[in-house]
Image (cartoon, rainbow, N blue to C red):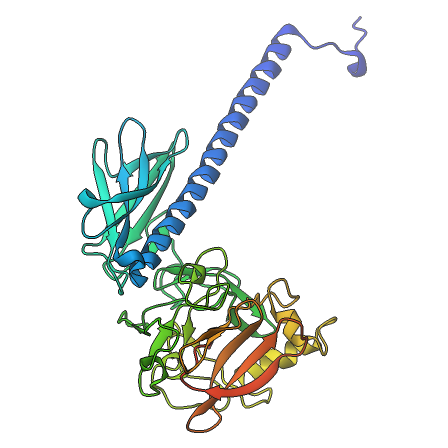
Length: 389
C-alpha cells in the first residue's frame, strides 16, 4: 500500500535537473536583456552628446567665433573617435579643440570601417555644403544623426518613427516631444492648452527659409530697424554680448525674436487663435487681450486657479514651477541692440499689438510672483512659446 502524502513528497533527480535548467535559461535571458538595455542607454547617451557637440560647433560657426568655421571629424578606425575642431576652410588646416573616443562596445557604422568624415558648419547660416549623417551601433542598437544642408540636426532610431510638431510622422499626443526644424521640443498640457515646454530656438521659418540674424554688436543700428525681421542669440551671463550656445545647450534659453519676426509679417490678432508666425504648422503665436478668450489670458486664468498658484502665477510658470511651463530667465535684447536681463527677467511675445509701434507680452522678474502684461517696442527681442491650435 502506498503511503503517499503530497506535502512530504521529495523531488526526483529529473525534476531537480529540469528546474535547474529553467533557472539557467531564465538567468541567461536576464543577463542578455540587461546587457542589451545597458547598451541602449549607453548609445542614447552618446548620441545626445554628439548632437550637443554638433550644435555647439554650429553655433560657433554661425557667429564666426575667432573668424573661423567649426566642425567635427569622425573616424572609424582601430578605436573609433571624433575630433571637434576649428578651421579657416577645411579639416587639413584644422586646430583640434578636443578628441573624444567612443565608449567600449559602441562603434561607428557610418562612416564605415577605415573611413573618416567631416561635418563643417558654414558661417552665419549654420548650414553645411552637403547633407551628411553619422551612425552609431552597439549589438542590436543603432542610432543615426542627420545634418541637413540647411543645418537641421535630427536623430532617429527607426525610419518613420519620429514625431514632428506639424503632425507628420508618428501620431502626436500632447505631452510627447516633437521635432521642428531639427530641434526636439517637449510639450505640456496646461488645462486645455498644449504648449511647447521649451523656448523656441528655430533659425528657419516653417517653409525652411532662413530667418535673418541681427547684427550682434551691442549698439546695432540695423537691429533697431522696425521694418526688418531678425532673431538674436540671448545675452551672455554678464549681459555684455550674445551667447548663442545657451540657446540650445542644457540652459535651453531659446533664441530672441523681434515682434515682426515672431508673427512672420502677419497682422495683429487680439483674441482667439493667433497666427502661425514662426511656429510649426498647426501651432500659433498666442494672443493676449487680457481676457480668458485669448491664448495667454486662458493660460493665466487656469494657472492662477491651481492650488498654490493663485496670485503666484508667474512663479508657477518658471523653471520648476507647478505648471511645468519651465520658463527660463533668458533676458532680452533692447531696440537699441543692447543685451539685458539674463537671469532676472523672462518676456514672451504675444501676437497682439498695443498700437502701431508696440505689442503685448507677458513677463516675470525673478523675485516677483505675478505674471505681468506689458507692452514693448516691436524691435525688442523676446522669447517665444508656441501654442497648439
